Length: 61
Picture 1 (spheres, one colour):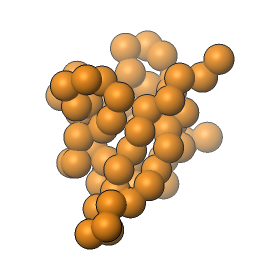
Picture 2 (tube, rainbow, N blue to C red):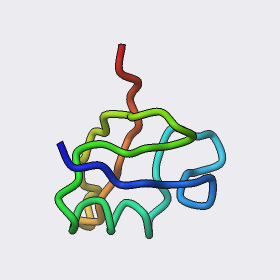
Picture 3 (spheres, rainbow, N blue to C red):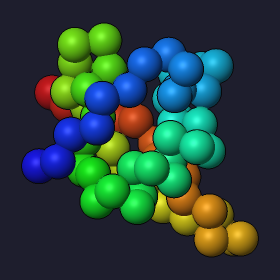
Picture 4 (cartoon, one colour):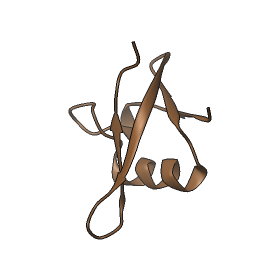
């Protein structure tokens, strides 16, 4: 488990996706989780049609 620390500046307005810059850092850094507001969150990495990374934030139970 590799954790990337993020803040509000790294998250989209709705709080369920990383913004493009943070998503690129997440994908290129081999991260699996983020730490956001003291919570460890498992993330789902996928790619758009133009091969840009998309990182969805899921909540761990």
